[in-house]
Image (tube, rainbow, N blue to C red; front, side, top):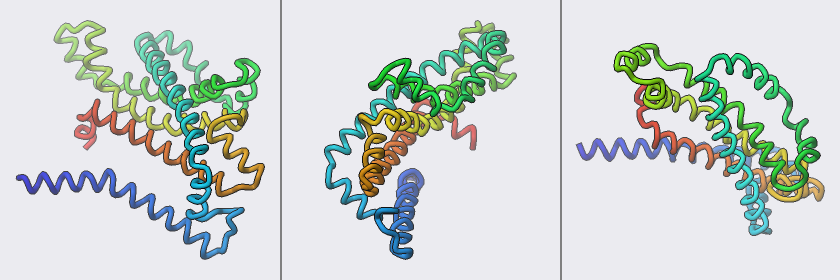
Length: 262
């Protein structure tokens, strides 16, 4: 029994840690091989050692700008999560409000967010706030839609069971509908993690004063492609870390979801 547990734990670690690391190593190796085989100049596509050298040239600067982008991303993601979940609960509870507002929300979401970035500078001004608003705009709709889909997909037999137990609407919602919706909610949260970083970078490119987006803009102006790739690599690491952080939170809060899906 103990041996089976050790084997199961080792398999779990390999599946969740080893395979993603192996995929990252293979991707870097193929990238490096392509630069060697096709003799690509660092100006066009730097090799991994060039990117590492660019990071080591100014690590404090890059880490400081990474922290700025991370704070913008987390703040906007948190606001979008709270707002999206609250609105999803309201719309799922009151169907007339859903029918009245959902087409408007869908229409607003169809507007390209990049087109709104310059207007945010006019409406809000310069600083961190427009970048956070851009993050909220990109994250809000996926979280809202996934939460509404989860809240609307409660099996009818569970609803009938709660009615037979004389549960109130609030008890049914908290103990049946919301737990059942959580796996779908986390799908939207995972999608929103990458969109949050995209929103922060859009804001930083439009207003290149702080953050990794400004590093990409300034390195493009000085033709320092390895520095731009160093910033992009940090963004990729940030996106992967946020995605797996949400996944770990899902396993902590919804441990039964995988058993049901299996």
